[in-house]
Amino acid sequence: DNSSLTLILDVFSDSMYTMLLDYAGQTNINNQLPAPTQGNLFCANTNNYIGENITCKIPRAYCSYQPITSGNPTYCNDKPYPNHDFTLLIWGEDWSDYDGGCLLVSGLVTLYDGKLQIEATNRSQVAYCN
Image 1: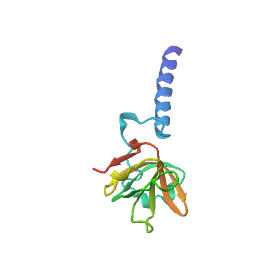
Image 2: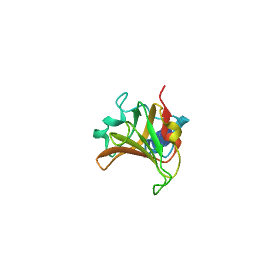
Image 3: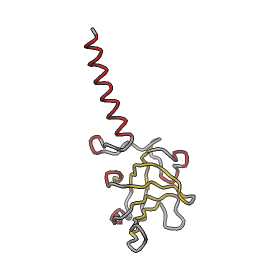
Image 4: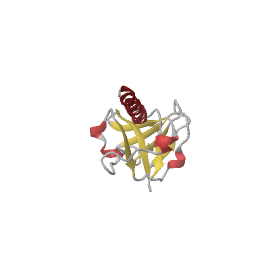
């Protein structure tokens, strides 16, 4: 009967909608980051993922808060500046407490001045590696 089919489609649609919102970063089901894309993808190797939302790994973060720089950014690089390949960028907040940690970073990969980066707006986008 049509009512059973309608119920199944409604449940399926709600599940798909939640999954799409989670993928777009608008929700965070169970407050967990998605598994790193392609296994343990290092953030420095995300060239093929520019424009995509992924999770990647910074084995050792070099984080620096710059309160006198416009926008008060925190930069967490995969290597000491200026020899880094990847930057986790946070505007207006001091996240330098991540310095020295192994990090899993989730977000949209972009390119700025030839360097890969993810801009984080919420600490839920960052987790320590196991």
